[in-house]
Length: 353
Ligand code: SPD
Image 1 (cartoon, protein in one colour):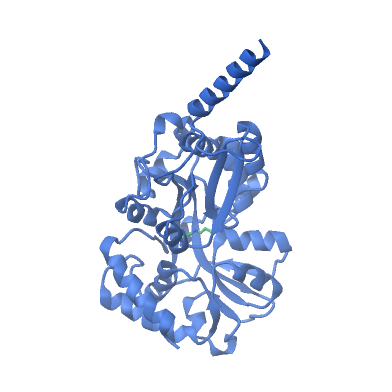
Image 2 (image 1 turned 45 degrees about the vertical axis):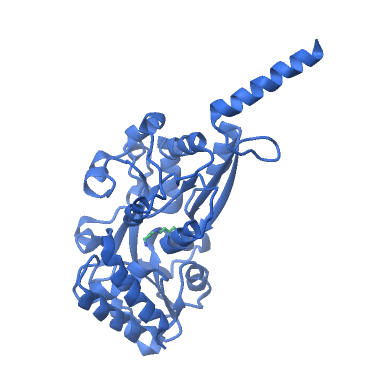
């Protein structure tokens, strides 16, 4: 009798595993969600909350650029259920069969996504392969206690008196983008001569920077190792908060700046699609979107979240860039096969002495 009961329980558990589509489970037998996200890009406590609400385990891994994400997946890394590519990288990945279609019927909170954002900003407007996550700007942060005569311009990188105290991102589109903006060109140009001119400009700046850096610049600007850094707005604001350091100032350079949208997507071959869909749904509940906006200082385009935001965050110009500054921003979009021109120019930048 006891044995029969055990068999029934076992059969039930097997059936549950199939029903929930849990491809892999943790040591404790719980389903596991493998997440691959940008560093410093999830409000504290959210992963634990998701684990508790879904009786599962989240294995969380981070990257610091689209190129790193792409290279890792291309090199054969499998097992991620959720990834966060920028929108201009989604089409690259779709083209190469790296993403699967989103089953919108399983993600009811997609109703919360701001339709105006989808129409005006998103590149995947019908959320076929990706769902908006957070969006923001890239600018320059400087220390006002060490750089007295700062002019918010990309030409700061030509200043030899700041040599060794400055960093640029290690990001092809961002760095060549800053060169293109300085020269008065579009960050999405497909003109080889414009891209090469931007590369020449960045090469002329290279002697003044300590390094190309996507992560260490944050601790570096806080410790005063670096005085001028190219950085992501929300990341810089997090550094200011964590260090309570009002000497760090985030600026949008007068020539212009880039804007971008990061998305959440499910890679081809994900083990646990059902849990991945639940995670996307979780990220777009109003409360979670609020937590992410207020912690990360990036905009989550979620209309249910907007009325719940604090007055303080609504007044924060890193998250809500004022209209008069916004006009100088240009969103990075996919340039298709012309990305090869950027890669070629970037290799020249990297190889230059
Ligand atoms: N720490 C999170 C930073 C996210 C930056 N994404 C922007 C990609 C565009 N280069």
